[in-house]
Length: 289
Image (cartoon, rainbow, N blue to C red; front, side, top):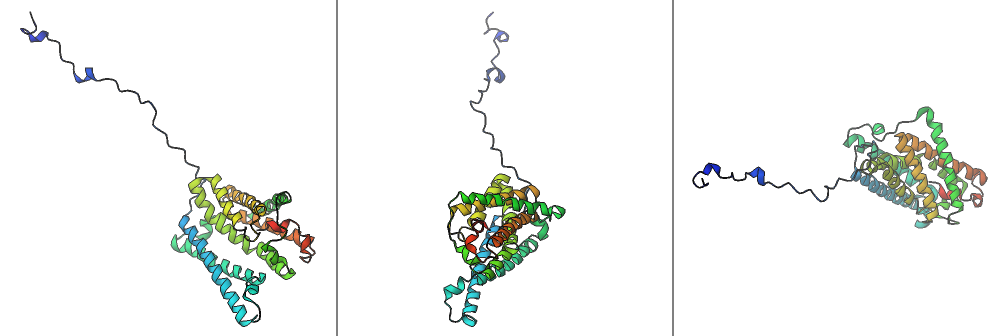
């Protein structure tokens, strides 16, 4: 009996499952996303734009303060001195920097507490180390070993910074500034504001490096762009930022900064007979920051 006469014996047409071919294996696995840098536990309320605003505001206030001081002194006190001589006066330059730092510190507090409604000390992770304070001062003293590299690096015999030590009175004012307001404001900006933003985005390692880099570069002008001095200060910045990263405390890095600058100032004062014979200062003052 043929299949035409009895269609029950006709072979069943292949269904969809029978003709489905196995899927070809993908020749390459899908790319996996690159691992993101560790967050380093930093989550500041501000962002990079806020940091740029602080930097720009600082430069503006410093310019206006220097201009106002030079104009006032030239008009009311030193009428027979040149504008350039007044502008290069170390005491007046320190006064302009002092006034600038006061205004910038107020701006920082208003930015954090007014814009983000967070307590300033908590936001920047000040966290004073308490009984461990002397340990971090000791870290600063130990950093003096980095200055020994200056004996093997090209260091200029004179720099623009030397004018701040031309007279003992200017030298003492500079020394006081270098162990008080100077390191305080540098730590607030670099380790308080800048590092947390970089570490949150790039991880702790690059946060440390990229915080220390501008920290070294801002001192390039005062040291006549001598790369040896800038390199030493960059390494100091790496240590200070590492202290901040490990301790989560700007207070700790501030103490290390004070320990470093203070040791340099004391050694230089002793070696020069109270800043009276600056030719004996050697390499040390070339690396103060």
